[in-house]
Image 1 (cartoon, rainbow, N blue to C red):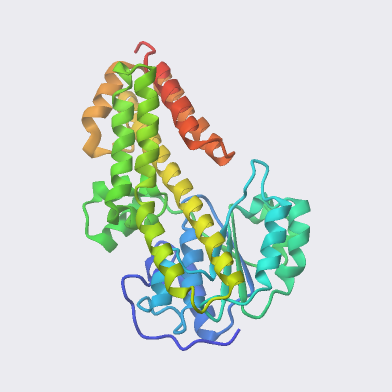
Image 2 (spheres, helix red, strand yellow):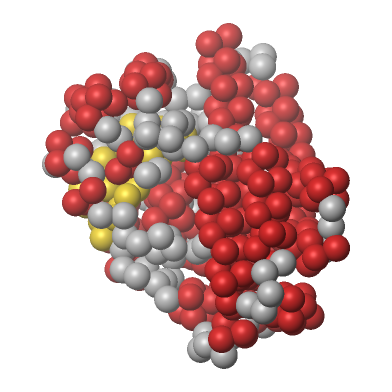
Length: 383
């Protein structure tokens, strides 16, 4: 890959600059881009919340931008918004991992020329779910990809990923980031109070996503909708629970309207000079993007439920750590008064089951309905 001259800009959308909880990773990636020696395939490994996906998007921005990641041009903005047609995000489409069809489609797509940029980037989340049958078809492409393609695989540990995959990638380890450290990074970036930043990290999972969460009124409203839904369960009948689940789905989808409008505008603008095949590719990529964003929103509101119930549990048990949802302390108080430790633990199990169901492609509304009914039952346990 040819080297890029890095423009001396550090705009607010320069994603590499936001990786301040992983300074060694940031410096390593910056050197690789500036020297023009970026690998054709990376494997980012580390614990959940370490910022691997944030770093993947940051590297993609630096590779796609004609200035090495200026943070200000149209390409950088598109990557930051996850709407660039030459940056592809993939995740397992089945409960057992990546499907063979997914990797075959990926290999076919890799051979196509980029749509807008001079480079293409493929981000493969949860690479530990690349099983032998799907991984084998990907190995040759990983070893000898086209000159204009970079793969970024994400996993928790190289030990959980097939050795044949690991051997074809440059491994980049991410250190564990504590919630306190992550919240401090969000505070430095946003200037917002510590308690709001702690809440955002608990919901969004990493500093960069927490910053984006705090910029979105719709995503914050989805969190509040989940808190209201749990708060109302003590007096809710089954019809109320089903209505609450439907309302949560509506709240999760609210932020997607702007994304869909942007996608439509780009398609209409580019329709005259893109081939039919390129337009179809872009439409399919847009659908995948909407699906991924909806899934992310669902996991955020489930994280909101888990965080709220955790606050109630540590309050009840007088455990260290402190309440994260300081704006919902009255709700936390009502939960503590209504049930005991066993009830709150059962409610947390219901959230974990819903997260697992969503990962296994259960209809989100059904997952919400079952979870809320289970939480209602759990919270009815005597204190």
